[in-house]
Image (cartoon, rainbow, N blue to C red):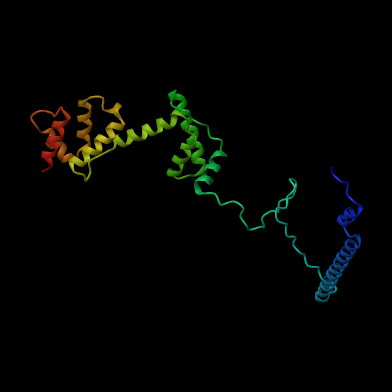
Length: 239
C-alpha cells in the first residue's frame, strides 16, 4: 500500500524563492552596469568625432561623401546607371573590316544568291560596281565588300570561279616539271569540269609548261596523247 506524501517532503522539494529573487536582482544589476558602460563609450566616441570635425569655411562647398553600397545590397530595377565619363570608351574600337562593312551596308547594296539568270547576274554586278566606285575603295576592299552580299549558292559560285581562274592562269615558271605537274594535278582535281578527258588535260598541260619544254615535247614524232607520255617527254626535255 502506497503511503501519501507528507507535507514535510513536499516542502523540501519546493525552490527557495528568496534565493531566486536575489539571483535575479544580481543579474539586473549586472545588465544595468553593462548598459551604463556602453553609454559611456558611445559618448566618448561622439566627443572624439566632434573634436576632429573641421568647421566649414565661408563660401566653401561641402565635400561630397560617396555612398558605399552595402554587401549584397539589392539594386532597384529602375535605378539609373552612371554613364562612362567623356573620353572613356565603354566598347572596344571597331576593326577596319567592321567599319568597312557598316559603311557598305548603309549603301543598301542588293544581295545575290547565285547566277540563275545571266541577265540578273550582270545587272547585279553593274549595281555593285556603281556603289564600290562611289565609295572610292581599293580593289581588295571591293572584293571584300562584294563577298558581304553573296548568299547561299553564290558563295559556292564565287569559290568555283576563283579556282577556275587560278587553274587557267597557272604556269610552270621556275618550278621543275615534277613540281609543276603536281600543282597542276591539284588544281585539276578542284576543277574536273575543265579537264573532262585526257586529250583536254594534255592540251592544258602543254600550255602550262614553259615555252622551251613545250616546243621540245611538240617536236616529237607523234603528239603525246596519254598524260603519262606527256609528262615523260617533258621530263626528258628538261635535261
